[in-house]
Amino acid sequence: MTLTKEERQESYRRRGALISAAKKGIFTESMRAATVATGEKARGKPKRKCVDGCTCRKHNQTPGRYVSCRGYVILTTLAHPLSNKPPGITGNVPEHRYVLWNKLGCESLDCEHPCHWCGTPLKWSILKADHVDFDTLNNAPENLVPACNRCNVTRSLRRKKGATT
Image (cartoon, rainbow, N blue to C red; front, side, top):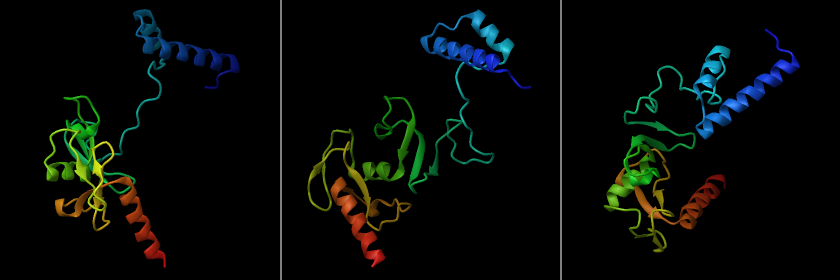
């Protein structure tokens, strides 16, 4: 079914009105009935689902883990201070930060720890969990140390430079 230019513009206008009304919370029953009748959606594009057989478990609210595109293990649906969510709300936490948190015995985001390499005092907002052996999948407590951004980046660059020469 091909729409004319006018029909397409009218559809876009109606869809935009529905979305803005839904955002403002004034989505009336008549608008909802019109939406059902025309088959339009009031919330924008549907969220993309993982492929069948997904093991990330992000969709059923059970704890799980997956490897991010940057090569880090991510723990899902944790109510933890490092998840950057309000207390009681679950979120995702990189496993290396979670393991280092437990290793250092932290109780809040305000605790300070020195950088393992230069000794600079760091709070969790700027602390990096540095992998001593550079293996991002090795999250053993003895492989993780607190580091400042400068030391973490410098070590990574030195390793890359050494690997290319």
